[in-house]
Length: 247
Image (cartoon, rainbow, N blue to C red; front, side, top):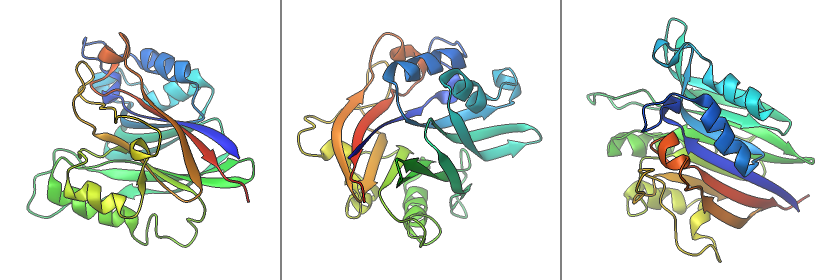
């Protein structure tokens, strides 16, 4: 069995609820959890509003990790999107936009990225996404992720984790669609009560999720809630310990 620690966090472009923009603070929180794989949402790259910093690379550098980034929005050199960071050997398999329904005014474009990790010779596929605020778009985007261009692709063999900010709660129809196919780590046996992630100051909603497929056993689930994470972003980081069965 190979143990892997995964952290997912909507970092809100590293803008805390105290008004500070600090990739260093975000990196310090992540470092304290010592994850092998990090999935970040709402990452700014070279944007004027956050000091023209490549936040994905800056956080990865501080953690000693490699990074993969996908921009959901690009205007000239300014980008905004999602990232996967890791200490493991990895390969970016695919990245791209998710469907936007015609006639709906999107607050922001949505996308995803897929990286394959080498866990001591066993592949682990990580899909990181940030879904729409609009229910109809979330359904379309979920169907896309489960379909032949993403998780249904022929080379997506072995254990899978679909992670990120899904903007959905467990009572929603999209959640039930996902859990017909995948397993919610917070519902795994022995994990106790589920833990909300939003808003960070007083979390009441479970918007951030890790769903799995294949030979993955959930060992521990934690939402990091302390004086730093309550202000570092408007979401709290979700940490999951998994064990991967070898071949």
